[in-house]
Length: 356
Image (cartoon, rainbow, N blue to C red; front, side):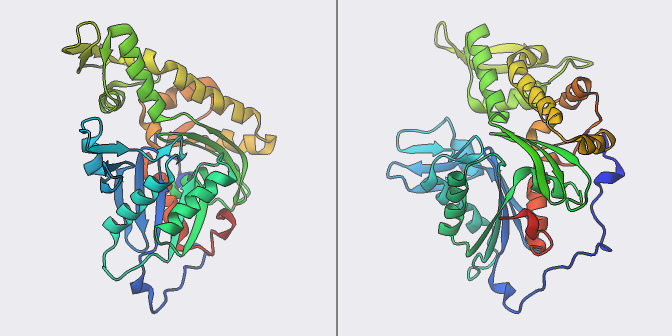
């Protein structure tokens, strides 16, 4: 569904002051990071989005990083005993501190344009529901990776800024950011989060649902990458006008040999229905907890979906039918959070109230 004018990017006539350029700025590569469970995106000051790669690291048998991102993703589930792949983030937070540090270093190295540059300022988005210990782990990883100043921002706030909302105004907006590890639901007004719910369920859980469904119902064992492909190509949250089909490959659990299976979007919808319903119920619960005046604003402006999960077919339709509210999918929902984090990096003083 197309976005209304309420979600346009603020124009250059905005009263906010741009951050002044220093004489030694060329020595630094200041960056903003959307450190996601599934993908990590990096925005460099004055350059825009410069990296979008899977959050995964390949290590050798001594625990030394071999590669990160796309190259490591190609190795995932296909490695031998001398190489293992690790995804250092789970449910939106750092699960393996050391590997996360290696990953951040490796990805920063990919985006540095000059060998002599260093990272002075780094803005990183984090799930709104994480603990102080988890926040400290993110900050420490960034500092160990070379950042001199580290700022954290909640993912829903970054998403709201990324889709062009003026988060400083006294108007309520509901953001639902569905990522790989978490679903962030927040009502935002006056530079703050009025109500937030962080559900540790996202695209990874949907992949796991698909794997379990085909193991249980078709005696077919498929991998994580195959499940992701199935979800993206034929997955849906509600019935489609024309149901989709595809052929998938896996290992037959009865005789142990490779097999192909013909599957439909109806199969996938059944597989992920429980998790999708949990997300929709969480949105409904958040609406129940929203103050009345802000509820009126949401009635006018609708619910904004961001993150990769927003691309699940007919999810907006299902939420609309359940809540009886307008639902908008952000333009390029996969990059909404990093665009917002980048906007904060470009004007730290203006967005000072939303960072920590």
